[in-house]
Length: 503
Ligand SMILES: Nc1ncnc2c1ncn2[C@@H]1O[C@H](COP(=O)(O)OP(=O)(O)O)[C@@H](O)[C@H]1O
Ligand SMILES: O=P(O)(O)OC[C@H](O)CO
Image (cartoon, rainbow, N blue to C red; front, side):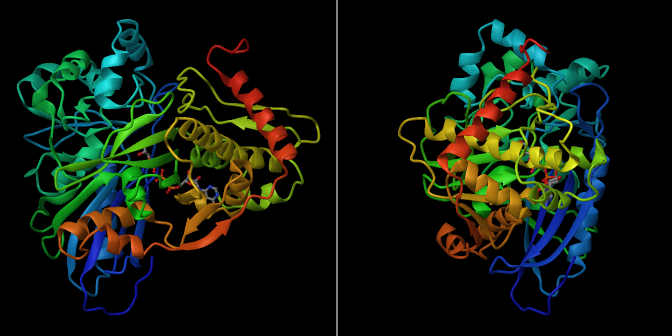
Protein backbone atom coordinates (compact mmCIF):
# COMPACT_ATOMS: atom_id res chain seq x y z
CA UNK A 1 0.00 0.00 0.00
CA UNK A 2 1.33 3.43 -0.80
CA UNK A 3 0.18 6.94 -1.21
CA UNK A 4 1.41 9.88 -3.22
CA UNK A 5 1.30 13.54 -2.50
CA UNK A 6 -1.60 15.93 -2.88
CA UNK A 7 -3.38 16.36 -6.18
CA UNK A 8 -6.21 18.68 -7.08
CA UNK A 9 -7.55 16.54 -9.97
CA UNK A 10 -10.17 13.99 -9.06
CA UNK A 11 -9.23 10.36 -8.50
CA UNK A 12 -11.01 7.13 -9.41
CA UNK A 13 -11.71 4.27 -7.04
CA UNK A 14 -11.67 0.68 -8.30
CA UNK A 15 -12.65 -2.58 -6.62
CA UNK A 16 -11.17 -5.71 -8.20
CA UNK A 17 -12.88 -8.67 -6.60
CA UNK A 18 -10.78 -11.63 -7.83
CA UNK A 19 -10.94 -15.34 -7.07
CA UNK A 20 -8.21 -15.41 -4.45
CA UNK A 21 -8.16 -11.81 -3.29
CA UNK A 22 -10.04 -8.56 -3.27
CA UNK A 23 -8.13 -5.41 -4.15
CA UNK A 24 -9.04 -1.78 -4.14
CA UNK A 25 -7.01 0.86 -5.93
CA UNK A 26 -7.06 4.60 -6.45
CA UNK A 27 -5.98 5.95 -9.83
CA UNK A 28 -5.25 9.47 -10.91
CA UNK A 29 -6.58 10.92 -14.16
CA UNK A 30 -3.51 9.65 -16.02
CA UNK A 31 -4.27 6.07 -14.97
CA UNK A 32 -1.40 6.02 -12.44
CA UNK A 33 -1.87 4.03 -9.25
CA UNK A 34 -1.82 6.24 -6.16
CA UNK A 35 -2.98 3.81 -3.47
CA UNK A 36 -3.82 0.11 -3.15
CA UNK A 37 -5.10 -2.33 -0.53
CA UNK A 38 -5.59 -6.08 -0.73
CA UNK A 39 -7.32 -8.84 1.25
CA UNK A 40 -6.80 -12.59 0.73
CA UNK A 41 -10.04 -14.55 0.31
CA UNK A 42 -10.62 -17.96 1.96
CA UNK A 43 -11.63 -20.79 -0.39
CA UNK A 44 -13.72 -23.79 0.64
CA UNK A 45 -13.48 -27.19 -1.07
CA UNK A 46 -16.30 -29.23 0.54
CA UNK A 47 -15.98 -32.11 -1.98
CA UNK A 48 -13.93 -33.16 -5.01
CA UNK A 49 -14.46 -30.50 -7.65
CA UNK A 50 -16.53 -28.18 -5.42
CA UNK A 51 -15.30 -24.63 -4.75
CA UNK A 52 -17.14 -22.14 -2.52
CA UNK A 53 -16.60 -18.71 -0.92
CA UNK A 54 -18.34 -16.84 1.88
CA UNK A 55 -20.22 -13.85 0.45
CA UNK A 56 -19.93 -11.99 3.74
CA UNK A 57 -16.11 -12.33 3.45
CA UNK A 58 -16.28 -10.87 -0.03
CA UNK A 59 -18.37 -7.93 1.16
CA UNK A 60 -16.20 -7.32 4.25
CA UNK A 61 -13.02 -7.38 2.14
CA UNK A 62 -14.37 -5.16 -0.64
CA UNK A 63 -15.63 -2.57 1.81
CA UNK A 64 -12.52 -2.78 4.01
CA UNK A 65 -10.10 -2.45 1.11
CA UNK A 66 -12.07 0.42 -0.44
CA UNK A 67 -12.19 2.26 2.89
CA UNK A 68 -8.46 1.77 3.34
CA UNK A 69 -7.56 3.38 0.03
CA UNK A 70 -10.24 6.05 0.40
CA UNK A 71 -8.53 7.14 3.61
CA UNK A 72 -5.49 7.99 1.48
CA UNK A 73 -7.34 10.01 -1.13
CA UNK A 74 -5.95 13.53 -1.20
CA UNK A 75 -8.46 14.60 -3.86
CA UNK A 76 -12.17 14.08 -4.43
CA UNK A 77 -13.17 10.60 -5.64
CA UNK A 78 -15.03 11.13 -8.92
CA UNK A 79 -16.44 7.63 -9.32
CA UNK A 80 -16.18 3.96 -8.43
CA UNK A 81 -15.68 1.08 -10.88
CA UNK A 82 -16.05 -2.62 -10.10
CA UNK A 83 -14.35 -5.59 -11.78
CA UNK A 84 -15.10 -9.08 -10.57
CA UNK A 85 -14.40 -12.78 -10.89
CA UNK A 86 -17.07 -13.84 -13.38
CA UNK A 87 -19.72 -16.61 -13.39
CA UNK A 88 -19.52 -17.10 -9.61
CA UNK A 89 -23.09 -17.31 -8.29
CA UNK A 90 -24.59 -15.36 -5.38
CA UNK A 91 -28.24 -15.66 -4.33
CA UNK A 92 -29.57 -13.54 -1.51
CA UNK A 93 -32.79 -12.55 0.22
CA UNK A 94 -34.14 -9.29 -1.20
CA UNK A 95 -35.64 -8.25 2.15
CA UNK A 96 -32.57 -8.74 4.32
CA UNK A 97 -29.70 -8.89 1.83
CA UNK A 98 -28.60 -12.17 3.45
CA UNK A 99 -27.09 -14.83 1.15
CA UNK A 100 -29.00 -18.14 1.17
CA UNK A 101 -25.89 -20.18 0.31
CA UNK A 102 -22.17 -19.66 -0.02
CA UNK A 103 -21.08 -18.38 -3.43
CA UNK A 104 -20.52 -21.25 -5.85
CA UNK A 105 -17.29 -20.33 -7.59
CA UNK A 106 -16.66 -20.47 -11.35
CA UNK A 107 -14.18 -23.32 -10.83
CA UNK A 108 -16.82 -25.55 -9.24
CA UNK A 109 -17.67 -28.69 -11.24
CA UNK A 110 -20.61 -30.05 -9.20
CA UNK A 111 -23.04 -29.59 -12.07
CA UNK A 112 -21.00 -31.51 -14.65
CA UNK A 113 -23.63 -34.30 -14.80
CA UNK A 114 -26.45 -31.75 -15.24
CA UNK A 115 -24.59 -30.25 -18.20
CA UNK A 116 -24.04 -33.73 -19.65
CA UNK A 117 -27.78 -34.50 -19.35
CA UNK A 118 -28.69 -31.23 -21.09
CA UNK A 119 -26.19 -31.99 -23.82
CA UNK A 120 -27.63 -35.48 -24.27
CA UNK A 121 -31.04 -33.81 -24.59
CA UNK A 122 -29.72 -31.79 -27.55
CA UNK A 123 -29.47 -28.35 -25.89
CA UNK A 124 -25.92 -27.54 -26.95
CA UNK A 125 -26.77 -25.83 -30.25
CA UNK A 126 -29.35 -23.52 -28.69
CA UNK A 127 -26.94 -22.56 -25.92
CA UNK A 128 -24.03 -22.00 -28.25
CA UNK A 129 -25.95 -19.94 -30.79
CA UNK A 130 -27.63 -17.63 -28.26
CA UNK A 131 -24.89 -17.24 -25.63
CA UNK A 132 -21.62 -17.93 -27.50
CA UNK A 133 -20.71 -20.24 -24.60
CA UNK A 134 -20.59 -24.02 -24.07
CA UNK A 135 -22.70 -26.28 -21.92
CA UNK A 136 -20.16 -26.48 -19.13
CA UNK A 137 -20.45 -26.25 -15.33
CA UNK A 138 -18.01 -23.29 -15.46
CA UNK A 139 -20.90 -20.90 -16.23
CA UNK A 140 -23.58 -19.66 -13.83
CA UNK A 141 -26.89 -21.20 -14.95
CA UNK A 142 -26.56 -24.75 -13.65
CA UNK A 143 -25.07 -23.43 -10.39
CA UNK A 144 -28.13 -21.22 -9.87
CA UNK A 145 -30.43 -24.21 -10.43
CA UNK A 146 -28.32 -26.29 -8.04
CA UNK A 147 -28.83 -23.77 -5.22
CA UNK A 148 -32.56 -23.50 -5.93
CA UNK A 149 -32.84 -27.30 -5.85
CA UNK A 150 -30.76 -27.84 -2.71
CA UNK A 151 -31.63 -25.00 -0.34
CA UNK A 152 -35.02 -25.87 1.21
CA UNK A 153 -37.79 -23.60 -0.10
CA UNK A 154 -35.46 -21.61 -2.35
CA UNK A 155 -37.16 -22.42 -5.65
CA UNK A 156 -40.60 -21.35 -4.38
CA UNK A 157 -39.14 -18.19 -2.84
CA UNK A 158 -37.34 -17.39 -6.08
CA UNK A 159 -40.58 -17.78 -8.02
CA UNK A 160 -42.34 -15.44 -5.58
CA UNK A 161 -39.64 -12.81 -6.26
CA UNK A 162 -38.22 -12.93 -2.74
CA UNK A 163 -34.68 -13.81 -3.82
CA UNK A 164 -32.09 -12.10 -6.01
CA UNK A 165 -29.35 -13.66 -8.13
CA UNK A 166 -26.20 -11.90 -9.17
CA UNK A 167 -22.63 -12.49 -10.17
CA UNK A 168 -20.24 -10.82 -7.72
CA UNK A 169 -20.56 -7.40 -9.39
CA UNK A 170 -24.31 -7.38 -8.80
CA UNK A 171 -23.92 -8.61 -5.23
CA UNK A 172 -21.40 -5.85 -4.42
CA UNK A 173 -23.55 -3.25 -6.18
CA UNK A 174 -26.56 -4.31 -4.12
CA UNK A 175 -24.58 -4.00 -0.89
CA UNK A 176 -22.83 -0.77 -1.88
CA UNK A 177 -26.12 0.90 -2.76
CA UNK A 178 -27.80 -0.34 0.43
CA UNK A 179 -30.11 -2.65 -1.58
CA UNK A 180 -31.27 0.14 -3.88
CA UNK A 181 -29.93 -1.34 -7.13
CA UNK A 182 -30.16 -4.85 -8.53
CA UNK A 183 -28.17 -4.69 -11.76
CA UNK A 184 -25.30 -6.21 -13.66
CA UNK A 185 -23.49 -5.22 -16.83
CA UNK A 186 -23.62 -6.91 -20.23
CA UNK A 187 -20.18 -8.55 -19.86
CA UNK A 188 -21.17 -10.29 -16.66
CA UNK A 189 -24.60 -11.21 -18.00
CA UNK A 190 -22.90 -12.77 -21.02
CA UNK A 191 -21.26 -15.36 -18.73
CA UNK A 192 -24.41 -16.79 -17.19
CA UNK A 193 -25.71 -18.99 -20.08
CA UNK A 194 -29.00 -17.09 -19.74
CA UNK A 195 -28.22 -14.02 -21.86
CA UNK A 196 -28.72 -13.70 -25.60
CA UNK A 197 -25.58 -11.87 -26.71
CA UNK A 198 -27.15 -10.89 -30.06
CA UNK A 199 -30.39 -9.37 -28.72
CA UNK A 200 -28.65 -8.22 -25.50
CA UNK A 201 -31.34 -9.52 -23.18
CA UNK A 202 -32.20 -12.41 -20.88
CA UNK A 203 -33.53 -15.27 -22.99
CA UNK A 204 -36.81 -16.98 -22.07
CA UNK A 205 -35.90 -20.28 -23.77
CA UNK A 206 -32.69 -20.45 -21.80
CA UNK A 207 -34.45 -19.54 -18.55
CA UNK A 208 -36.81 -22.48 -19.20
CA UNK A 209 -34.01 -24.81 -20.16
CA UNK A 210 -32.01 -24.12 -16.99
CA UNK A 211 -35.13 -23.75 -14.80
CA UNK A 212 -34.20 -20.26 -13.61
CA UNK A 213 -37.13 -17.97 -12.63
CA UNK A 214 -36.96 -14.55 -14.31
CA UNK A 215 -37.83 -12.89 -10.99
CA UNK A 216 -34.32 -13.71 -9.73
CA UNK A 217 -32.48 -11.73 -12.37
CA UNK A 218 -30.83 -8.31 -12.23
CA UNK A 219 -31.32 -5.62 -14.87
CA UNK A 220 -28.59 -5.56 -17.52
CA UNK A 221 -26.80 -2.23 -18.10
CA UNK A 222 -23.95 -0.87 -20.21
CA UNK A 223 -20.49 -1.44 -18.74
CA UNK A 224 -20.04 2.33 -18.38
CA UNK A 225 -22.90 4.40 -16.97
CA UNK A 226 -24.54 5.31 -13.68
CA UNK A 227 -25.36 2.11 -11.76
CA UNK A 228 -26.15 3.80 -8.46
CA UNK A 229 -24.63 5.77 -5.61
CA UNK A 230 -22.97 4.33 -2.51
CA UNK A 231 -25.27 4.28 0.50
CA UNK A 232 -24.89 7.03 3.10
CA UNK A 233 -22.35 6.21 5.80
CA UNK A 234 -20.33 3.62 3.88
CA UNK A 235 -17.66 6.18 2.95
CA UNK A 236 -17.11 9.77 4.10
CA UNK A 237 -18.91 10.89 0.91
CA UNK A 238 -21.38 9.18 -1.38
CA UNK A 239 -19.68 7.98 -4.57
CA UNK A 240 -21.35 7.32 -7.93
CA UNK A 241 -20.76 3.80 -9.21
CA UNK A 242 -20.28 4.33 -12.95
CA UNK A 243 -18.38 1.34 -14.28
CA UNK A 244 -18.75 -2.42 -14.01
CA UNK A 245 -17.34 -5.36 -15.98
CA UNK A 246 -16.17 -8.92 -15.55
CA UNK A 247 -12.50 -8.93 -14.60
CA UNK A 248 -11.22 -10.37 -17.90
CA UNK A 249 -13.14 -7.82 -19.91
CA UNK A 250 -11.91 -5.09 -17.57
CA UNK A 251 -8.34 -6.29 -18.20
CA UNK A 252 -8.97 -6.08 -21.96
CA UNK A 253 -9.90 -2.44 -21.43
CA UNK A 254 -6.99 -1.82 -19.03
CA UNK A 255 -4.69 -3.26 -21.73
CA UNK A 256 -6.24 -0.82 -24.23
CA UNK A 257 -7.29 -3.64 -26.62
CA UNK A 258 -10.02 -1.54 -28.23
CA UNK A 259 -9.42 -2.42 -31.86
CA UNK A 260 -10.29 -5.73 -33.53
CA UNK A 261 -7.28 -8.06 -33.61
CA UNK A 262 -5.73 -6.95 -30.30
CA UNK A 263 -5.37 -9.71 -27.72
CA UNK A 264 -4.47 -9.87 -24.04
CA UNK A 265 -3.88 -12.76 -21.67
CA UNK A 266 -4.38 -12.40 -17.92
CA UNK A 267 -2.61 -14.75 -15.51
CA UNK A 268 -4.42 -14.80 -12.18
CA UNK A 269 -5.94 -17.93 -10.66
CA UNK A 270 -6.86 -19.00 -14.18
CA UNK A 271 -5.67 -17.63 -17.50
CA UNK A 272 -8.01 -15.90 -19.88
CA UNK A 273 -7.04 -14.78 -23.37
CA UNK A 274 -9.45 -12.36 -25.04
CA UNK A 275 -9.23 -11.17 -28.61
CA UNK A 276 -11.26 -8.12 -29.58
CA UNK A 277 -13.40 -8.96 -32.64
CA UNK A 278 -15.29 -5.66 -32.95
CA UNK A 279 -19.02 -5.02 -33.04
CA UNK A 280 -20.10 -8.31 -34.63
CA UNK A 281 -19.97 -11.49 -32.54
CA UNK A 282 -17.58 -14.01 -34.08
CA UNK A 283 -19.27 -17.24 -35.17
CA UNK A 284 -18.80 -20.12 -32.70
CA UNK A 285 -15.27 -21.47 -32.90
CA UNK A 286 -14.24 -24.91 -31.68
CA UNK A 287 -13.10 -24.86 -28.07
CA UNK A 288 -13.46 -21.07 -27.76
CA UNK A 289 -16.12 -18.76 -26.39
CA UNK A 290 -17.76 -15.73 -27.97
CA UNK A 291 -18.44 -13.16 -25.32
CA UNK A 292 -19.31 -9.50 -24.77
CA UNK A 293 -16.10 -7.47 -24.43
CA UNK A 294 -17.87 -4.30 -23.25
CA UNK A 295 -21.05 -2.38 -23.96
CA UNK A 296 -20.92 1.39 -24.27
CA UNK A 297 -23.93 3.60 -25.17
CA UNK A 298 -25.97 0.47 -25.84
CA UNK A 299 -23.49 -0.82 -28.45
CA UNK A 300 -21.80 -4.11 -27.62
CA UNK A 301 -18.28 -5.03 -28.68
CA UNK A 302 -17.39 -8.72 -28.72
CA UNK A 303 -14.40 -10.91 -28.01
CA UNK A 304 -13.30 -14.45 -28.65
CA UNK A 305 -12.09 -15.98 -25.41
CA UNK A 306 -10.02 -18.93 -24.38
CA UNK A 307 -10.36 -19.82 -20.71
CA UNK A 308 -7.85 -21.92 -18.75
CA UNK A 309 -8.90 -22.88 -15.24
CA UNK A 310 -5.50 -23.22 -13.56
CA UNK A 311 -2.63 -20.78 -14.07
CA UNK A 312 -1.61 -19.09 -10.81
CA UNK A 313 -3.68 -21.82 -9.13
CA UNK A 314 -0.90 -24.27 -10.03
CA UNK A 315 1.64 -22.01 -8.31
CA UNK A 316 -0.65 -21.56 -5.32
CA UNK A 317 -0.91 -25.36 -5.08
CA UNK A 318 2.91 -25.64 -4.95
CA UNK A 319 2.71 -23.37 -1.91
CA UNK A 320 -0.46 -24.51 -0.13
CA UNK A 321 -0.82 -28.11 -1.33
CA UNK A 322 2.79 -29.26 -1.57
CA UNK A 323 4.58 -26.78 0.73
CA UNK A 324 7.29 -26.62 -1.94
CA UNK A 325 7.63 -22.83 -2.00
CA UNK A 326 7.04 -20.00 0.48
CA UNK A 327 6.12 -17.35 -2.08
CA UNK A 328 4.81 -17.55 -5.62
CA UNK A 329 7.80 -15.51 -6.77
CA UNK A 330 10.20 -18.30 -5.59
CA UNK A 331 9.22 -20.27 -8.68
CA UNK A 332 11.22 -17.97 -10.99
CA UNK A 333 14.48 -18.66 -9.16
CA UNK A 334 13.75 -22.40 -8.90
CA UNK A 335 12.84 -22.75 -12.57
CA UNK A 336 16.01 -20.90 -13.59
CA UNK A 337 18.15 -23.10 -11.31
CA UNK A 338 17.72 -26.17 -13.53
CA UNK A 339 18.97 -26.37 -17.10
CA UNK A 340 16.08 -28.32 -18.58
CA UNK A 341 12.70 -29.61 -17.49
CA UNK A 342 14.22 -33.13 -17.43
CA UNK A 343 11.08 -34.45 -19.10
CA UNK A 344 8.94 -33.51 -16.08
CA UNK A 345 5.48 -32.15 -16.99
CA UNK A 346 2.58 -30.96 -14.87
CA UNK A 347 -0.97 -30.84 -16.19
CA UNK A 348 -2.80 -28.66 -13.62
CA UNK A 349 -6.27 -30.09 -14.37
CA UNK A 350 -7.32 -29.76 -10.71
CA UNK A 351 -10.87 -28.89 -11.76
CA UNK A 352 -10.79 -30.39 -15.25
CA UNK A 353 -9.46 -28.74 -18.38
CA UNK A 354 -10.94 -25.64 -20.01
CA UNK A 355 -10.21 -24.35 -23.50
CA UNK A 356 -9.61 -25.81 -25.94
CA UNK A 357 -10.12 -29.28 -24.42
CA UNK A 358 -13.25 -28.71 -22.26
CA UNK A 359 -12.87 -31.91 -20.27
CA UNK A 360 -14.44 -31.57 -16.80
CA UNK A 361 -13.38 -35.14 -15.92
CA UNK A 362 -9.66 -34.56 -16.57
CA UNK A 363 -7.54 -34.47 -13.42
CA UNK A 364 -4.12 -33.07 -12.65
CA UNK A 365 -0.91 -35.04 -12.99
CA UNK A 366 2.84 -34.72 -12.74
CA UNK A 367 4.66 -37.15 -15.03
CA UNK A 368 8.13 -37.98 -16.30
CA UNK A 369 9.62 -38.20 -12.82
CA UNK A 370 13.02 -39.85 -12.43
CA UNK A 371 15.26 -40.09 -9.36
CA UNK A 372 17.18 -36.97 -10.37
CA UNK A 373 14.02 -34.83 -10.54
CA UNK A 374 13.83 -32.20 -7.77
CA UNK A 375 11.39 -29.68 -6.38
CA UNK A 376 12.89 -27.17 -8.82
CA UNK A 377 11.77 -29.34 -11.75
CA UNK A 378 8.25 -29.50 -10.34
CA UNK A 379 8.16 -25.73 -9.86
CA UNK A 380 9.42 -25.31 -13.41
CA UNK A 381 6.81 -27.77 -14.68
CA UNK A 382 4.06 -25.68 -13.04
CA UNK A 383 5.24 -22.48 -14.78
CA UNK A 384 5.79 -24.30 -18.07
CA UNK A 385 2.28 -25.78 -17.94
CA UNK A 386 0.74 -22.32 -18.05
CA UNK A 387 2.76 -21.40 -21.13
CA UNK A 388 1.78 -24.63 -22.93
CA UNK A 389 -1.86 -24.04 -22.09
CA UNK A 390 -1.56 -20.53 -23.53
CA UNK A 391 -0.08 -22.04 -26.70
CA UNK A 392 -3.07 -24.39 -26.98
CA UNK A 393 -5.36 -21.36 -26.66
CA UNK A 394 -3.48 -19.24 -29.16
CA UNK A 395 -3.42 -22.06 -31.68
CA UNK A 396 -7.17 -22.43 -31.32
CA UNK A 397 -7.65 -18.67 -31.74
CA UNK A 398 -5.39 -18.30 -34.75
CA UNK A 399 -6.61 -21.51 -36.43
CA UNK A 400 -10.06 -19.98 -36.81
CA UNK A 401 -10.00 -18.54 -40.28
CA UNK A 402 -10.22 -14.78 -40.71
CA UNK A 403 -8.81 -13.81 -37.30
CA UNK A 404 -5.32 -12.45 -37.65
CA UNK A 405 -2.78 -13.82 -35.20
CA UNK A 406 -1.53 -11.44 -32.52
CA UNK A 407 1.67 -9.59 -33.28
CA UNK A 408 2.53 -9.56 -29.60
CA UNK A 409 0.65 -10.94 -26.65
CA UNK A 410 -0.14 -8.38 -23.94
CA UNK A 411 0.07 -10.10 -20.55
CA UNK A 412 -1.00 -9.08 -17.05
CA UNK A 413 -2.22 -10.54 -13.74
CA UNK A 414 -0.26 -11.78 -10.71
CA UNK A 415 1.78 -14.36 -12.61
CA UNK A 416 2.88 -11.91 -15.30
CA UNK A 417 5.31 -10.40 -12.78
CA UNK A 418 7.36 -13.61 -13.13
CA UNK A 419 10.15 -12.85 -15.65
CA UNK A 420 11.10 -16.49 -16.14
CA UNK A 421 7.51 -17.34 -16.99
CA UNK A 422 7.14 -14.43 -19.44
CA UNK A 423 10.36 -15.40 -21.25
CA UNK A 424 9.32 -19.07 -21.44
CA UNK A 425 5.90 -17.99 -22.70
CA UNK A 426 7.49 -15.99 -25.54
CA UNK A 427 9.75 -18.98 -26.34
CA UNK A 428 6.88 -21.46 -26.47
CA UNK A 429 4.53 -19.16 -28.38
CA UNK A 430 7.35 -18.17 -30.71
CA UNK A 431 5.96 -14.64 -30.46
CA UNK A 432 6.86 -11.54 -28.47
CA UNK A 433 5.21 -11.04 -25.08
CA UNK A 434 4.58 -7.49 -23.85
CA UNK A 435 4.14 -6.62 -20.20
CA UNK A 436 2.58 -3.23 -19.47
CA UNK A 437 3.99 -0.73 -17.02
CA UNK A 438 0.76 -1.02 -15.01
CA UNK A 439 0.19 -4.70 -14.13
CA UNK A 440 -3.10 -4.05 -12.29
CA UNK A 441 -4.91 -3.81 -15.59
CA UNK A 442 -8.15 -5.28 -14.26
CA UNK A 443 -8.62 -2.55 -11.68
CA UNK A 444 -7.42 0.02 -14.19
CA UNK A 445 -10.04 -1.16 -16.70
CA UNK A 446 -12.76 -0.76 -14.07
CA UNK A 447 -11.47 2.73 -13.29
CA UNK A 448 -11.45 3.62 -17.01
CA UNK A 449 -15.07 2.50 -17.37
CA UNK A 450 -16.05 4.53 -14.32
CA UNK A 451 -14.04 7.51 -15.53
CA UNK A 452 -15.61 7.47 -18.99
CA UNK A 453 -19.14 7.96 -17.76
CA UNK A 454 -18.17 10.43 -15.05
CA UNK A 455 -16.42 12.73 -17.53
CA UNK A 456 -12.83 12.07 -16.39
CA UNK A 457 -11.93 10.38 -19.70
CA UNK A 458 -13.52 11.40 -22.97
CA UNK A 459 -13.12 8.19 -24.98
CA UNK A 460 -11.09 5.04 -25.59
CA UNK A 461 -8.57 7.01 -27.64
CA UNK A 462 -7.28 9.00 -24.68
CA UNK A 463 -7.13 5.81 -22.62
CA UNK A 464 -5.25 3.90 -25.33
CA UNK A 465 -2.63 6.62 -25.54
CA UNK A 466 -1.71 6.00 -21.89
CA UNK A 467 -0.78 2.31 -22.45
CA UNK A 468 2.92 1.52 -22.42
CA UNK A 469 5.00 -1.65 -22.18
CA UNK A 470 7.58 -1.87 -19.43
CA UNK A 471 9.18 -4.95 -20.96
CA UNK A 472 9.03 -6.98 -24.14
CA UNK A 473 10.17 -10.63 -24.12
CA UNK A 474 11.43 -11.90 -27.49
CA UNK A 475 11.30 -15.60 -28.43
CA UNK A 476 14.68 -17.38 -28.32
CA UNK A 477 14.13 -21.13 -28.74
CA UNK A 478 15.27 -23.08 -31.78
CA UNK A 479 12.36 -24.72 -33.66
CA UNK A 480 13.68 -28.17 -32.70
CA UNK A 481 13.86 -27.63 -28.93
CA UNK A 482 10.47 -25.90 -28.97
CA UNK A 483 8.85 -28.76 -30.87
CA UNK A 484 10.30 -31.36 -28.49
CA UNK A 485 8.96 -29.54 -25.42
CA UNK A 486 5.51 -29.15 -26.98
CA UNK A 487 5.40 -32.82 -27.93
CA UNK A 488 6.09 -33.76 -24.26
CA UNK A 489 3.24 -31.50 -23.14
CA UNK A 490 0.79 -33.00 -25.64
CA UNK A 491 1.62 -36.51 -24.38
CA UNK A 492 1.04 -35.41 -20.77
CA UNK A 493 -2.34 -33.81 -21.65
CA UNK A 494 -3.51 -37.04 -23.27
CA UNK A 495 -2.72 -38.88 -20.04
CA UNK A 496 -4.68 -36.38 -17.93
CA UNK A 497 -7.87 -36.71 -20.00
CA UNK A 498 -11.00 -37.89 -18.20
CA UNK A 499 -11.23 -40.95 -20.46
CA UNK A 500 -7.49 -41.76 -20.46
CA UNK A 501 -6.82 -45.46 -19.68
CA UNK A 502 -5.13 -44.68 -16.34
CA UNK A 503 -7.94 -42.53 -14.88
N1 LIG B 1 5.75 -14.07 -9.14
C1 LIG B 1 4.81 -14.99 -9.38
N2 LIG B 1 5.11 -16.13 -10.04
C2 LIG B 1 4.16 -17.06 -10.30
N3 LIG B 1 2.88 -16.94 -9.92
C3 LIG B 1 2.52 -15.85 -9.25
C4 LIG B 1 3.46 -14.82 -8.94
N4 LIG B 1 2.81 -13.85 -8.23
C5 LIG B 1 1.52 -14.26 -8.13
N5 LIG B 1 1.35 -15.47 -8.73
C6 LIG B 1 0.10 -16.25 -8.83
O1 LIG B 1 -0.89 -15.38 -9.35
C7 LIG B 1 -2.13 -15.57 -8.66
C8 LIG B 1 -2.58 -14.23 -8.12
O2 LIG B 1 -2.81 -13.38 -9.17
P1 LIG B 1 -4.09 -12.44 -9.16
O3 LIG B 1 -4.04 -11.68 -10.44
O4 LIG B 1 -4.10 -11.71 -7.89
O5 LIG B 1 -5.23 -13.57 -9.17
P2 LIG B 1 -6.83 -13.53 -8.89
O6 LIG B 1 -7.34 -12.24 -9.48
O7 LIG B 1 -7.32 -14.75 -9.62
O8 LIG B 1 -7.09 -13.67 -7.43
C9 LIG B 1 -1.91 -16.56 -7.55
O9 LIG B 1 -2.51 -17.78 -7.94
C10 LIG B 1 -0.39 -16.70 -7.46
O10 LIG B 1 -0.04 -18.05 -7.22
O1 LIG C 1 -10.09 -14.27 -10.48
P1 LIG C 1 -9.43 -14.32 -11.80
O2 LIG C 1 -8.68 -13.07 -12.11
O3 LIG C 1 -8.60 -15.55 -12.01
O4 LIG C 1 -10.60 -14.37 -12.91
C1 LIG C 1 -11.59 -15.35 -12.84
C2 LIG C 1 -12.45 -15.29 -14.07
O5 LIG C 1 -13.20 -14.12 -14.16
C3 LIG C 1 -13.33 -16.49 -14.16
O6 LIG C 1 -14.03 -16.50 -15.38
